Image (tube, rainbow, N blue to C red):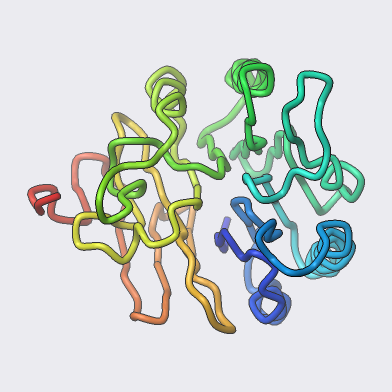
Length: 252
């Protein structure tokens, strides 16, 4: 199964156009949150209309997996926590969104929503507990924020990941977690686009401006990955958890 992972497109329509041109080369296109831009000049309702159409068009070319990020919530729950209800409105047989589990060729993909408070965090935890009992050879999580205290959450000054996610990774031991949120982590010497946490790989697709998004091409059968950005290409063999594809001694 070949995956193309990106994140933090933030209503960059050129990058969505690039995905449309590229999507049919992969079994799945995965967008790890922040499709919209709450700091943009366009109203959120208009952004949602446009991006929903892009996602539906993408899903006609290949299977698409999307989790929400902190820019994507357009409504509030009774607990006052933001949620991306618009994603639920466009889900289909080839477009998978928050809260869903996707089973394919022995692999299980869990799509985690952006949790905006204690209620949504507990609901997400309950979802992962349910998914932990499903049959699977490899377990893939899509979660917008990366775990804390690791290369993929390094901002250049400090770590800004999700500490709670660290606990979940330690408990459930997913095969790989795909995230975004910390835009520049892949571009710092002490940061990176891939790291190991316990028995899991964690990846951050990052973000760059321009017509092409940063991407990770991931082959689940070979457990190999390719990171592409405007600064070039990096490859990683992730078939052995005991062999790190980076220098763990580089300073922070």
